[in-house]
Length: 292
Length: 196
Image (cartoon, rainbow over the protein chains, first blue to last red):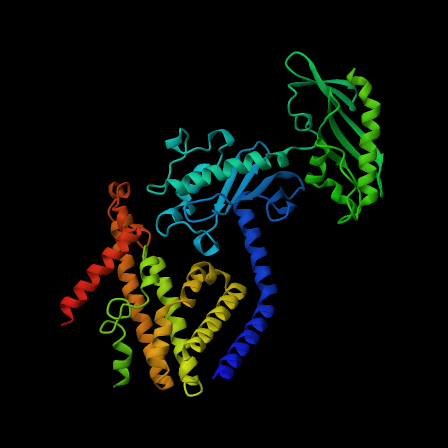
Protein backbone atom coordinates (compact mmCIF):
# COMPACT_ATOMS: atom_id res chain seq x y z
CA UNK A 1 0.00 0.00 0.00
CA UNK A 2 2.73 2.46 0.98
CA UNK A 3 4.76 1.07 -1.90
CA UNK A 4 1.90 1.74 -4.34
CA UNK A 5 1.60 5.33 -3.13
CA UNK A 6 5.34 5.76 -3.45
CA UNK A 7 5.34 4.37 -6.98
CA UNK A 8 2.44 6.57 -8.07
CA UNK A 9 4.17 9.64 -6.61
CA UNK A 10 7.40 8.67 -8.35
CA UNK A 11 5.70 8.18 -11.72
CA UNK A 12 3.87 11.48 -11.38
CA UNK A 13 7.10 13.35 -10.55
CA UNK A 14 8.97 11.77 -13.45
CA UNK A 15 6.18 12.61 -15.91
CA UNK A 16 5.96 16.17 -14.59
CA UNK A 17 9.69 16.77 -14.79
CA UNK A 18 9.71 15.53 -18.40
CA UNK A 19 6.78 17.73 -19.33
CA UNK A 20 8.41 20.67 -17.57
CA UNK A 21 11.76 20.36 -19.31
CA UNK A 22 9.99 19.86 -22.63
CA UNK A 23 7.74 22.89 -22.32
CA UNK A 24 9.98 25.30 -20.34
CA UNK A 25 11.94 26.69 -23.34
CA UNK A 26 8.72 27.11 -25.27
CA UNK A 27 7.05 28.85 -22.34
CA UNK A 28 10.00 31.23 -22.13
CA UNK A 29 9.71 31.98 -25.87
CA UNK A 30 6.00 32.64 -25.48
CA UNK A 31 6.66 34.92 -22.51
CA UNK A 32 9.22 36.89 -24.51
CA UNK A 33 6.82 37.29 -27.41
CA UNK A 34 4.11 38.44 -25.01
CA UNK A 35 6.48 40.95 -23.38
CA UNK A 36 7.40 42.35 -26.79
CA UNK A 37 3.72 42.58 -27.76
CA UNK A 38 3.07 44.37 -24.45
CA UNK A 39 5.92 46.84 -25.07
CA UNK A 40 4.54 47.63 -28.52
CA UNK A 41 1.13 48.29 -27.00
CA UNK A 42 2.38 51.16 -24.84
CA UNK A 43 4.68 52.98 -27.27
CA UNK A 44 5.11 53.02 -31.04
CA UNK A 45 8.62 51.72 -31.74
CA UNK A 46 10.51 49.28 -33.88
CA UNK A 47 12.65 47.57 -31.27
CA UNK A 48 13.36 47.64 -27.56
CA UNK A 49 16.71 47.49 -25.78
CA UNK A 50 16.60 46.45 -22.15
CA UNK A 51 18.46 48.97 -20.00
CA UNK A 52 17.47 47.38 -16.69
CA UNK A 53 16.54 43.70 -17.04
CA UNK A 54 12.76 43.18 -17.06
CA UNK A 55 12.18 46.69 -15.74
CA UNK A 56 13.24 49.43 -18.15
CA UNK A 57 13.51 49.33 -21.94
CA UNK A 58 14.63 51.96 -24.40
CA UNK A 59 12.22 52.28 -27.33
CA UNK A 60 13.96 52.71 -30.69
CA UNK A 61 12.23 53.62 -33.95
CA UNK A 62 13.03 52.41 -37.47
CA UNK A 63 15.67 55.12 -37.94
CA UNK A 64 17.55 53.97 -34.80
CA UNK A 65 16.53 57.00 -32.76
CA UNK A 66 15.46 56.66 -29.16
CA UNK A 67 11.82 57.72 -29.00
CA UNK A 68 11.20 57.05 -25.31
CA UNK A 69 11.29 54.42 -22.62
CA UNK A 70 9.03 51.73 -21.25
CA UNK A 71 9.18 50.76 -17.59
CA UNK A 72 7.40 48.28 -15.40
CA UNK A 73 6.09 48.83 -11.86
CA UNK A 74 4.19 46.69 -9.38
CA UNK A 75 2.31 48.96 -6.96
CA UNK A 76 0.35 47.36 -4.14
CA UNK A 77 -3.34 47.15 -5.08
CA UNK A 78 -6.29 45.75 -3.15
CA UNK A 79 -5.54 42.05 -3.68
CA UNK A 80 -1.84 42.13 -4.47
CA UNK A 81 0.74 43.83 -6.65
CA UNK A 82 -0.66 45.37 -9.85
CA UNK A 83 1.70 44.75 -12.81
CA UNK A 84 1.76 47.89 -14.99
CA UNK A 85 3.81 48.70 -18.08
CA UNK A 86 4.16 52.39 -18.93
CA UNK A 87 5.47 54.05 -22.09
CA UNK A 88 7.00 57.54 -21.85
CA UNK A 89 8.04 59.77 -24.74
CA UNK A 90 11.12 61.99 -24.59
CA UNK A 91 9.13 64.83 -23.02
CA UNK A 92 7.99 62.61 -20.18
CA UNK A 93 4.42 62.28 -21.48
CA UNK A 94 2.71 58.92 -21.14
CA UNK A 95 2.25 57.27 -24.53
CA UNK A 96 0.24 54.35 -23.18
CA UNK A 97 -0.11 52.01 -20.26
CA UNK A 98 -0.84 48.32 -20.07
CA UNK A 99 -2.07 46.53 -16.97
CA UNK A 100 -1.74 42.75 -16.81
CA UNK A 101 -5.04 40.85 -16.96
CA UNK A 102 -6.14 38.42 -14.27
CA UNK A 103 -4.65 35.55 -16.28
CA UNK A 104 -1.30 37.36 -16.28
CA UNK A 105 -1.21 37.81 -12.54
CA UNK A 106 -3.57 40.66 -11.64
CA UNK A 107 -5.13 39.81 -8.27
CA UNK A 108 -7.74 42.55 -7.94
CA UNK A 109 -11.38 41.68 -7.16
CA UNK A 110 -13.03 39.91 -10.14
CA UNK A 111 -15.69 42.09 -11.73
CA UNK A 112 -14.60 45.15 -9.78
CA UNK A 113 -10.94 45.99 -9.28
CA UNK A 114 -9.99 44.15 -12.46
CA UNK A 115 -11.84 46.86 -14.41
CA UNK A 116 -8.65 48.92 -14.24
CA UNK A 117 -7.52 47.01 -17.34
CA UNK A 118 -10.42 48.38 -19.39
CA UNK A 119 -9.57 51.00 -22.05
CA UNK A 120 -12.00 53.56 -20.56
CA UNK A 121 -9.84 53.72 -17.43
CA UNK A 122 -6.47 52.95 -18.96
CA UNK A 123 -6.60 55.46 -21.80
CA UNK A 124 -7.13 58.38 -19.41
CA UNK A 125 -3.41 58.29 -18.73
CA UNK A 126 -2.33 58.89 -22.32
CA UNK A 127 -0.67 62.29 -22.74
CA UNK A 128 -0.46 62.93 -18.99
CA UNK A 129 2.78 63.91 -17.27
CA UNK A 130 3.88 63.25 -13.72
CA UNK A 131 2.12 66.44 -12.57
CA UNK A 132 -1.45 65.36 -13.36
CA UNK A 133 -1.59 61.69 -12.51
CA UNK A 134 -4.02 61.80 -9.61
CA UNK A 135 -7.58 60.62 -9.07
CA UNK A 136 -10.30 63.29 -9.20
CA UNK A 137 -11.00 62.50 -5.54
CA UNK A 138 -7.40 63.37 -4.75
CA UNK A 139 -7.56 66.58 -6.75
CA UNK A 140 -6.36 65.27 -10.09
CA UNK A 141 -7.85 64.45 -13.47
CA UNK A 142 -8.28 60.67 -13.48
CA UNK A 143 -11.75 59.15 -13.02
CA UNK A 144 -11.56 56.24 -10.56
CA UNK A 145 -13.47 53.00 -11.21
CA UNK A 146 -16.70 53.08 -9.18
CA UNK A 147 -16.21 51.09 -5.95
CA UNK A 148 -12.62 50.27 -6.86
CA UNK A 149 -10.84 53.35 -5.57
CA UNK A 150 -7.99 51.40 -4.00
CA UNK A 151 -7.13 49.64 -7.27
CA UNK A 152 -7.48 52.89 -9.25
CA UNK A 153 -5.33 54.81 -6.79
CA UNK A 154 -2.70 52.07 -6.86
CA UNK A 155 -2.38 52.49 -10.62
CA UNK A 156 -1.89 56.26 -10.27
CA UNK A 157 0.64 55.95 -7.46
CA UNK A 158 2.54 53.20 -9.23
CA UNK A 159 2.85 55.18 -12.44
CA UNK A 160 3.85 58.31 -10.57
CA UNK A 161 6.55 56.59 -8.55
CA UNK A 162 7.74 54.81 -11.69
CA UNK A 163 8.17 58.07 -13.56
CA UNK A 164 10.02 59.60 -10.60
CA UNK A 165 12.31 56.62 -10.45
CA UNK A 166 12.96 55.98 -14.12
CA UNK A 167 12.62 59.38 -15.85
CA UNK A 168 16.39 59.80 -15.67
CA UNK A 169 16.63 57.12 -18.36
CA UNK A 170 14.89 59.54 -20.71
CA UNK A 171 17.65 62.11 -20.77
CA UNK A 172 19.50 62.38 -24.05
CA UNK A 173 23.21 62.39 -23.09
CA UNK A 174 23.98 65.68 -24.87
CA UNK A 175 21.36 67.56 -22.86
CA UNK A 176 23.41 69.39 -20.25
CA UNK A 177 20.36 69.80 -17.99
CA UNK A 178 20.40 66.04 -17.50
CA UNK A 179 24.02 66.12 -16.46
CA UNK A 180 23.55 69.10 -14.16
CA UNK A 181 19.86 69.10 -13.14
CA UNK A 182 20.11 71.97 -10.63
CA UNK A 183 21.45 74.49 -13.14
CA UNK A 184 19.15 77.10 -14.67
CA UNK A 185 21.38 78.04 -17.57
CA UNK A 186 24.73 77.27 -19.16
CA UNK A 187 27.42 79.56 -20.57
CA UNK A 188 29.99 78.19 -22.97
CA UNK A 189 33.56 78.75 -21.74
CA UNK A 190 35.48 76.57 -24.20
CA UNK A 191 33.74 75.92 -27.53
CA UNK A 192 31.98 72.57 -27.52
CA UNK A 193 33.99 71.47 -24.49
CA UNK A 194 33.24 73.32 -21.30
CA UNK A 195 30.24 75.20 -19.92
CA UNK A 196 29.54 76.99 -16.67
CA UNK A 197 26.40 75.79 -14.95
CA UNK A 198 24.54 78.82 -13.57
CA UNK A 199 22.05 78.95 -10.73
CA UNK A 200 19.76 81.87 -9.84
CA UNK A 201 22.62 84.33 -9.31
CA UNK A 202 25.80 82.33 -8.90
CA UNK A 203 27.87 79.68 -10.64
CA UNK A 204 27.05 76.17 -9.46
CA UNK A 205 29.74 74.28 -11.33
CA UNK A 206 30.87 73.13 -14.76
CA UNK A 207 29.92 70.62 -17.42
CA UNK A 208 32.61 69.35 -19.78
CA UNK A 209 33.07 66.90 -22.61
CA UNK A 210 36.32 64.92 -22.84
CA UNK A 211 37.79 61.76 -24.28
CA UNK A 212 40.00 58.97 -23.03
CA UNK A 213 41.54 55.90 -24.64
CA UNK A 214 39.39 52.81 -24.08
CA UNK A 215 40.07 49.21 -25.03
CA UNK A 216 38.98 49.43 -28.64
CA UNK A 217 38.73 53.11 -29.37
CA UNK A 218 38.38 56.53 -27.77
CA UNK A 219 35.60 56.90 -25.22
CA UNK A 220 33.88 60.29 -25.27
CA UNK A 221 32.04 61.32 -22.13
CA UNK A 222 30.30 64.27 -20.55
CA UNK A 223 30.64 65.11 -16.83
CA UNK A 224 28.96 67.59 -14.51
CA UNK A 225 30.97 68.90 -11.55
CA UNK A 226 29.88 71.18 -8.71
CA UNK A 227 31.96 73.93 -7.11
CA UNK A 228 32.60 71.52 -4.23
CA UNK A 229 34.00 68.98 -6.65
CA UNK A 230 31.04 66.62 -6.54
CA UNK A 231 30.03 64.85 -9.73
CA UNK A 232 26.40 65.53 -10.71
CA UNK A 233 26.21 63.18 -13.67
CA UNK A 234 28.20 61.17 -16.19
CA UNK A 235 27.08 60.03 -19.65
CA UNK A 236 28.88 58.24 -22.45
CA UNK A 237 28.65 60.11 -25.76
CA UNK A 238 30.71 57.73 -27.83
CA UNK A 239 32.28 54.35 -27.19
CA UNK A 240 33.08 51.42 -29.40
CA UNK A 241 33.92 48.95 -26.66
CA UNK A 242 33.35 45.22 -27.15
CA UNK A 243 29.62 44.46 -27.19
CA UNK A 244 28.59 42.42 -24.19
CA UNK A 245 31.90 43.10 -22.38
CA UNK A 246 33.41 46.60 -22.47
CA UNK A 247 30.13 48.26 -23.39
CA UNK A 248 28.82 47.68 -19.86
CA UNK A 249 30.36 51.08 -19.11
CA UNK A 250 27.14 52.46 -20.64
CA UNK A 251 25.22 50.82 -17.81
CA UNK A 252 23.15 53.48 -16.02
CA UNK A 253 23.77 52.05 -12.59
CA UNK A 254 27.50 52.21 -13.15
CA UNK A 255 27.31 55.76 -14.49
CA UNK A 256 25.05 56.88 -11.67
CA UNK A 257 27.46 55.48 -9.09
CA UNK A 258 29.94 58.26 -10.00
CA UNK A 259 27.66 60.68 -8.19
CA UNK A 260 28.36 58.93 -4.88
CA UNK A 261 32.08 58.28 -5.21
CA UNK A 262 34.54 56.99 -7.79
CA UNK A 263 33.34 53.43 -8.45
CA UNK A 264 35.53 50.34 -8.68
CA UNK A 265 36.30 48.81 -12.06
CA UNK A 266 33.65 46.43 -13.42
CA UNK A 267 34.75 42.82 -13.17
CA UNK A 268 35.11 41.35 -16.65
CA UNK A 269 35.42 44.79 -18.23
CA UNK A 270 38.38 46.10 -16.27
CA UNK A 271 40.17 47.80 -19.16
CA UNK A 272 37.15 49.76 -20.39
CA UNK A 273 35.83 50.71 -16.97
CA UNK A 274 39.25 51.67 -15.61
CA UNK A 275 39.87 53.75 -18.72
CA UNK A 276 36.66 55.65 -18.03
CA UNK A 277 37.29 56.02 -14.29
CA UNK A 278 40.87 57.25 -14.80
CA UNK A 279 39.80 59.45 -17.71
CA UNK A 280 37.20 61.15 -15.54
CA UNK A 281 39.62 61.56 -12.59
CA UNK A 282 42.26 63.07 -14.86
CA UNK A 283 39.92 65.52 -16.61
CA UNK A 284 38.33 66.56 -13.33
CA UNK A 285 41.82 67.48 -12.10
CA UNK A 286 42.44 69.54 -15.24
CA UNK A 287 39.11 71.36 -15.39
CA UNK A 288 38.90 71.93 -11.63
CA UNK A 289 40.78 75.17 -12.17
CA UNK A 290 37.77 76.63 -13.94
CA UNK A 291 35.83 76.35 -10.71
CA UNK A 292 37.93 78.90 -8.87
CA UNK B 1 -29.22 3.05 -14.82
CA UNK B 2 -29.45 4.11 -18.47
CA UNK B 3 -26.49 5.84 -20.03
CA UNK B 4 -28.51 8.95 -20.83
CA UNK B 5 -29.58 9.17 -17.19
CA UNK B 6 -25.97 9.00 -15.97
CA UNK B 7 -25.28 12.02 -18.12
CA UNK B 8 -28.41 14.11 -17.45
CA UNK B 9 -28.63 13.58 -13.71
CA UNK B 10 -25.52 15.76 -13.17
CA UNK B 11 -27.12 18.69 -14.99
CA UNK B 12 -29.95 19.60 -12.58
CA UNK B 13 -31.14 16.72 -10.43
CA UNK B 14 -27.74 16.13 -8.85
CA UNK B 15 -26.21 19.47 -9.75
CA UNK B 16 -22.81 19.69 -8.03
CA UNK B 17 -23.17 23.27 -6.81
CA UNK B 18 -26.90 23.60 -6.18
CA UNK B 19 -27.84 20.11 -4.95
CA UNK B 20 -24.71 18.29 -3.81
CA UNK B 21 -23.19 21.56 -2.57
CA UNK B 22 -19.65 20.72 -3.67
CA UNK B 23 -17.27 22.87 -5.69
CA UNK B 24 -18.65 25.93 -3.90
CA UNK B 25 -15.37 27.79 -3.64
CA UNK B 26 -14.94 28.47 -7.38
CA UNK B 27 -18.71 28.88 -7.72
CA UNK B 28 -18.63 31.76 -5.25
CA UNK B 29 -15.33 33.23 -6.34
CA UNK B 30 -15.56 33.10 -10.14
CA UNK B 31 -19.21 33.90 -10.84
CA UNK B 32 -18.93 37.68 -10.96
CA UNK B 33 -19.35 37.85 -14.73
CA UNK B 34 -20.75 35.43 -17.33
CA UNK B 35 -17.47 35.27 -19.17
CA UNK B 36 -15.45 34.22 -16.11
CA UNK B 37 -18.14 31.79 -14.95
CA UNK B 38 -18.36 30.10 -18.32
CA UNK B 39 -14.57 29.84 -18.67
CA UNK B 40 -14.23 28.33 -15.22
CA UNK B 41 -17.05 25.89 -15.98
CA UNK B 42 -15.53 24.70 -19.24
CA UNK B 43 -12.05 24.30 -17.77
CA UNK B 44 -13.48 22.28 -14.86
CA UNK B 45 -15.60 20.13 -17.22
CA UNK B 46 -12.57 19.30 -19.31
CA UNK B 47 -10.52 18.23 -16.29
CA UNK B 48 -13.41 16.36 -14.68
CA UNK B 49 -14.07 14.38 -17.86
CA UNK B 50 -10.47 13.22 -18.18
CA UNK B 51 -9.76 12.72 -14.50
CA UNK B 52 -12.84 10.49 -14.23
CA UNK B 53 -11.58 8.43 -17.18
CA UNK B 54 -8.06 8.10 -15.75
CA UNK B 55 -9.28 7.21 -12.25
CA UNK B 56 -11.75 4.71 -13.68
CA UNK B 57 -9.06 3.00 -15.74
CA UNK B 58 -6.84 2.69 -12.68
CA UNK B 59 -9.60 1.90 -10.18
CA UNK B 60 -8.75 -1.81 -9.77
CA UNK B 61 -5.08 -1.11 -9.05
CA UNK B 62 -5.49 1.57 -6.40
CA UNK B 63 -5.35 0.20 -2.83
CA UNK B 64 -8.38 1.30 -0.83
CA UNK B 65 -6.42 2.70 2.12
CA UNK B 66 -4.42 5.24 0.12
CA UNK B 67 -6.94 6.01 -2.60
CA UNK B 68 -7.48 9.67 -1.68
CA UNK B 69 -3.80 10.76 -1.86
CA UNK B 70 -3.45 8.81 -5.10
CA UNK B 71 -6.50 10.52 -6.59
CA UNK B 72 -5.06 13.89 -5.61
CA UNK B 73 -1.68 13.05 -7.12
CA UNK B 74 -3.22 11.89 -10.39
CA UNK B 75 -5.57 14.85 -10.72
CA UNK B 76 -2.96 17.48 -9.85
CA UNK B 77 -0.38 15.93 -12.17
CA UNK B 78 -2.91 15.89 -14.99
CA UNK B 79 -3.94 19.50 -14.39
CA UNK B 80 -0.33 20.67 -14.15
CA UNK B 81 0.54 18.97 -17.44
CA UNK B 82 -2.36 20.77 -19.11
CA UNK B 83 -1.24 24.02 -17.50
CA UNK B 84 2.29 23.69 -18.94
CA UNK B 85 1.11 22.70 -22.40
CA UNK B 86 -1.41 25.49 -22.53
CA UNK B 87 1.23 28.04 -21.47
CA UNK B 88 3.68 26.76 -24.06
CA UNK B 89 1.50 26.17 -27.08
CA UNK B 90 -1.82 27.92 -26.56
CA UNK B 91 -0.92 31.30 -25.03
CA UNK B 92 -4.24 32.82 -26.13
CA UNK B 93 -6.26 30.10 -24.47
CA UNK B 94 -4.02 30.41 -21.44
CA UNK B 95 -4.76 34.13 -21.26
CA UNK B 96 -8.45 33.31 -21.06
CA UNK B 97 -8.46 30.19 -18.89
CA UNK B 98 -5.06 30.07 -17.19
CA UNK B 99 -6.31 31.89 -14.12
CA UNK B 100 -8.79 29.08 -13.38
CA UNK B 101 -6.32 26.23 -13.63
CA UNK B 102 -4.88 26.55 -10.11
CA UNK B 103 -8.45 26.64 -8.78
CA UNK B 104 -9.21 23.32 -10.45
CA UNK B 105 -6.24 21.50 -8.92
CA UNK B 106 -7.77 21.82 -5.48
CA UNK B 107 -11.40 21.54 -6.53
CA UNK B 108 -13.26 19.14 -4.26
CA UNK B 109 -15.85 18.48 -6.96
CA UNK B 110 -13.29 16.66 -9.09
CA UNK B 111 -11.96 14.68 -6.15
CA UNK B 112 -15.55 14.07 -5.07
CA UNK B 113 -16.55 12.52 -8.41
CA UNK B 114 -13.36 10.41 -8.43
CA UNK B 115 -14.18 9.06 -4.99
CA UNK B 116 -17.95 8.74 -5.31
CA UNK B 117 -18.26 7.53 -8.90
CA UNK B 118 -15.20 6.96 -11.08
CA UNK B 119 -13.46 4.65 -8.60
CA UNK B 120 -16.44 2.29 -8.64
CA UNK B 121 -17.76 2.39 -12.22
CA UNK B 122 -16.78 1.56 -15.79
CA UNK B 123 -14.77 3.94 -17.94
CA UNK B 124 -17.68 4.90 -20.22
CA UNK B 125 -20.06 5.55 -17.35
CA UNK B 126 -17.40 7.58 -15.54
CA UNK B 127 -16.76 9.67 -18.64
CA UNK B 128 -20.51 10.36 -19.01
CA UNK B 129 -20.75 11.19 -15.32
CA UNK B 130 -17.80 13.58 -15.58
CA UNK B 131 -19.29 15.32 -18.58
CA UNK B 132 -22.76 15.63 -17.01
CA UNK B 133 -21.52 16.92 -13.65
CA UNK B 134 -19.11 19.29 -15.39
CA UNK B 135 -21.81 20.77 -17.61
CA UNK B 136 -24.15 21.05 -14.63
CA UNK B 137 -21.40 22.97 -12.82
CA UNK B 138 -20.96 25.21 -15.89
CA UNK B 139 -24.72 25.80 -16.05
CA UNK B 140 -24.99 26.75 -12.39
CA UNK B 141 -21.98 29.09 -12.59
CA UNK B 142 -23.16 30.73 -15.81
CA UNK B 143 -26.63 31.45 -14.40
CA UNK B 144 -25.07 32.86 -11.24
CA UNK B 145 -22.65 34.89 -13.34
CA UNK B 146 -25.50 36.27 -15.46
CA UNK B 147 -27.57 37.34 -12.44
CA UNK B 148 -24.60 38.93 -10.70
CA UNK B 149 -23.33 40.66 -13.81
CA UNK B 150 -26.74 42.05 -14.79
CA UNK B 151 -27.48 43.52 -11.37
CA UNK B 152 -23.97 44.25 -10.21
CA UNK B 153 -22.62 45.80 -13.37
CA UNK B 154 -25.61 46.47 -15.62
CA UNK B 155 -24.10 44.36 -18.38
CA UNK B 156 -24.41 40.89 -19.86
CA UNK B 157 -21.31 39.44 -21.48
CA UNK B 158 -19.85 42.93 -21.24
CA UNK B 159 -22.68 44.62 -23.18
CA UNK B 160 -24.70 47.32 -21.41
CA UNK B 161 -28.35 46.31 -21.13
CA UNK B 162 -29.93 48.98 -18.95
CA UNK B 163 -28.69 52.06 -20.75
CA UNK B 164 -26.24 54.66 -19.53
CA UNK B 165 -28.11 55.76 -16.40
CA UNK B 166 -27.72 52.43 -14.65
CA UNK B 167 -24.03 52.26 -15.42
CA UNK B 168 -23.21 54.85 -12.78
CA UNK B 169 -25.20 53.20 -10.00
CA UNK B 170 -25.28 49.42 -10.30
CA UNK B 171 -26.01 47.21 -7.30
CA UNK B 172 -22.30 46.80 -6.58
CA UNK B 173 -23.12 44.53 -3.69
CA UNK B 174 -24.04 41.82 -6.20
CA UNK B 175 -20.54 41.62 -7.62
CA UNK B 176 -18.91 41.49 -4.19
CA UNK B 177 -18.73 38.22 -2.19
CA UNK B 178 -22.06 38.78 -0.32
CA UNK B 179 -23.82 38.90 -3.70
CA UNK B 180 -22.48 35.44 -4.51
CA UNK B 181 -23.86 34.01 -1.26
CA UNK B 182 -27.22 35.68 -1.82
CA UNK B 183 -27.58 34.40 -5.40
CA UNK B 184 -26.47 30.87 -4.56
CA UNK B 185 -28.88 30.80 -1.60
CA UNK B 186 -31.85 31.95 -3.67
CA UNK B 187 -31.03 29.49 -6.45
CA UNK B 188 -30.75 26.63 -3.96
CA UNK B 189 -34.10 27.62 -2.43
CA UNK B 190 -35.78 27.66 -5.86
CA UNK B 191 -34.32 24.26 -6.76
CA UNK B 192 -35.55 22.81 -3.45
CA UNK B 193 -39.00 24.29 -3.97
CA UNK B 194 -39.49 22.98 -7.49
CA UNK B 195 -37.61 19.68 -7.44
CA UNK B 196 -40.03 18.04 -5.02
